[in-house]
Length: 194
Image 1 (cartoon, one colour):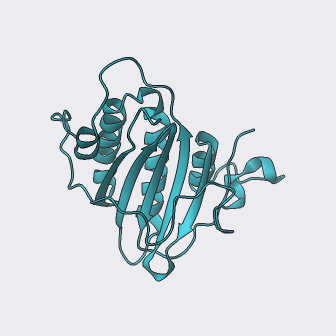
Image 2: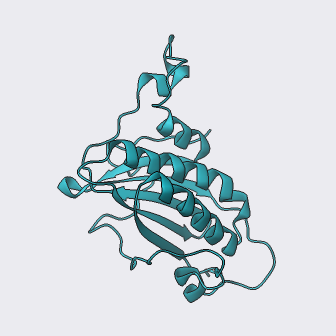
């Protein structure tokens, strides 16, 4: 028997520096509302890295969607953009794997950070319409208290102090189920912890 319903939130935005801070606050508010306080810091950091990548690299525009999905004990965070190019981790992003990393590099570590803070991560290509970059975290057991209803979880009730952006209707990628690292396409990278 499933004791907690799945929870989903999505927000569309332009990945501009001024919006990234606002999205961090919105994500934190939703996680706290879902009683996932322990995940606020790693999720905020991961979302910041992924939105920064969209801001720096995505073409033809900076339009993207941030999605949070809690299903049982697994939180999946994804950022969807319109650029079909798959991100490539640079050698300096993974210093453990190369002898001489560029210690002075000011960029190129975003995916390494996402990999280090998450249980798994990867990329779901969407053909010419873009891609999703996602990561997962194990959700801690919820603290005692009243359960959050599906309506509250999906529509942000109780978050009066945070200006919410328009909510996107729920819909999985056309014909593509959420995948685990073992099921992910060959292009997905796995950061599974041992």
